[in-house]
Image 1 (cartoon, helix red, strand yellow):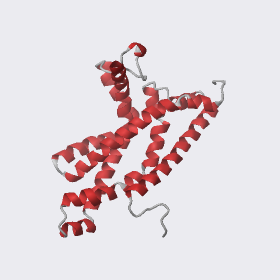
Image 2 (cartoon, one colour):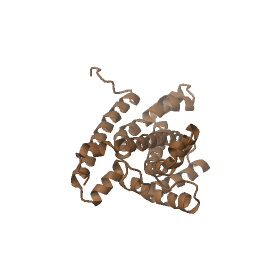
Image 3 (tube, rainbow, N blue to C red):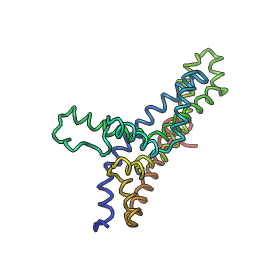
Image 4 (spheres, rainbow, N blue to C red):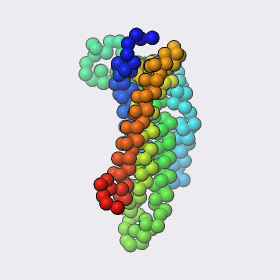
Length: 243
């Protein structure tokens, strides 16, 4: 359809998907890990019950449904945020602070739609693993020897509870970096996801295969990074150490 080689067509859209994907990935981890820890320390209290309700609702709703709801409420009805895109038409005429605020206004709704599902999964994974580690025998032994429970949690339990989170890093990276076909289409974000969606609708199969190939490559890189992060948080794994 484009009359150009597939690779340059896709690489033109990669920076946009990287921009949204990396910010979404960073936001998901920065919010999910502290929230999961707070929920584990306040298990079955009011904070845990209310946050669990919000988390499960977010987990049940697909990202594109959340995107449509947010777009309908904050853009169509209230008019507070833009309908889509990455920047306003008059972006070049704005000052530095105004450019930052303009990008944030365009980023907010797609970011919420991107992270909602993985945010819920990561939060519950951190909470459940941390609670399992806090109930382990080694924590009870450390407390019996005089170590404060919170110190045992921060020094030992937390690190062990992050191992499953690190091992799942590869799958999350592939989703974020490859972009979401429907979310990018809803918010008119000209990234790999929108390119793949348009190519699929136009039966432009060389572009579809190219997007899938680059997405698969991102998944492989994510799996390698996941193994590296597992080695960082798991004291039982040491690269290059003899058995």
